[in-house]
Image (cartoon, rainbow, N blue to C red; front, top):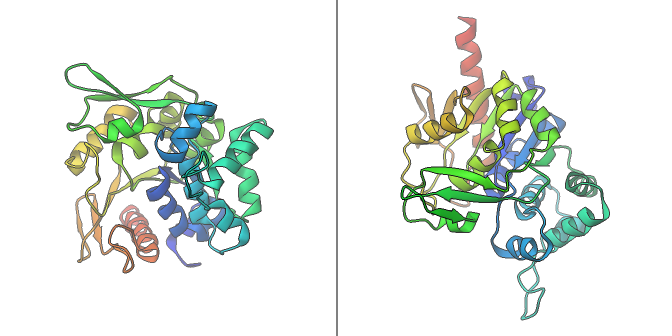
Length: 303
């Protein structure tokens, strides 16, 4: 993909959670050091949730997932990083990669240093940055005023919340703010809208940096209905949420799946589904679609 139009950019930042963001990073990994992933760290389920309860650490699972998807060449290191313990003991269900990141965090000064050590081990050029290096939880506010605490509980809500917040409010990672401030292109999603895309945007310094950026912002819509209260959100509602959180900055374009390729205002429809899994974006198709949207924008500016 050396001729992909995205190569013209020096700084592309993708924002989200583990699975969706990992797919985007993997699709655009040919960009190498030009690409940065800013990862939500509010997950409190599974192995990650157990570690957070016991160690008061950030959520490592989504960071691990992104690193694993960027490790294109299978190796002993990458296989170990994704190994999950079985059996009926305290290790059962834990992912070895999460434990390695936690151990490195305790040996290093900063969580970002732990991530960078794994990047070096797995020979990953693309930068992967936690949204914050301090533990925090996602909190949803219902219409009646009730507070729903924790990402897994927010995903399990029957109705969509009126607002979201972080508790405690933490500081955005400096490197994440700098990356988005200098970005030429920012990609939001795909992934759970409220619990993967929104958390980084709730950080005031990160939102401010994005507003200061001159980057074009593209929202990548999900392929399938997500199991969360935002499942019924229209595209306009998603844009409204982004606008409500960010203030000045709005989404410039939206990428959605369709069997036919066509343009409808700011929405680009392209065939995006992987032949191997209906819930995953085809890597080549996703990269090509994003490149075509950028090329279309360039053509408009040249007119």
